[in-house]
Length: 275
Image (cartoon, rainbow, N blue to C red; front, side, top):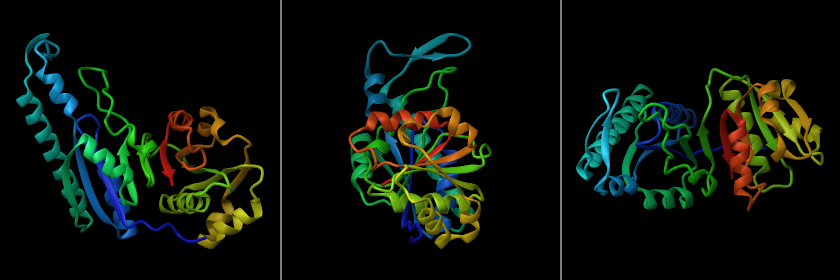
């Protein structure tokens, strides 16, 4: 089994998601793989359209006062957030001695490019920042992980929580070996235990041998279990295993995007979607 190779790490930001953790993780992984680093800030035209509506007002809490909210206000806000994202990427890259590129793009252009482009790893922050209390607006990036042609790392959980990288392994799928290599690599990188939940037709001895090609020590302590329906693994089971990162072969359920999204939601941890 060959090691995981990543040539480019792309971190996606927008006005909705907290992007600090995603930028930190992207720079760390780019340094690990000696990969190029690129940041993209997504401008959402929906915000401009909303600001242009005559009845839209800006509410100030906790006073309850309101004032006009114009297109110019949205554009200024987006410029400020894009500047913060670029500076955060520059700071993180500088600490590790990395070069980087950064771009601001409109939603449709960015979504299409990242879904169909040749980036090797896309990193997204899957949780949104609170707005006006507990309101969390959906990110325009939220659909990209399920349409992208490349691997996507969704940051959803607390990195300090969990002690295992859990792989859902289907030996018949197109990305089976790439998924196994990625799971092993991430377990080694973060000093975590590797747990493989495999379909019954998988050969456990061959699996352990493939892991041993990368790391005999990782193979010696890896846990391999049989699970007939990988898509039905429960939230409770993933929590019981101490899942810090769930690695899913996203090619195994082609045409079942809804099922994949439900599985991601159950993880309550970071998720790596492999292609």
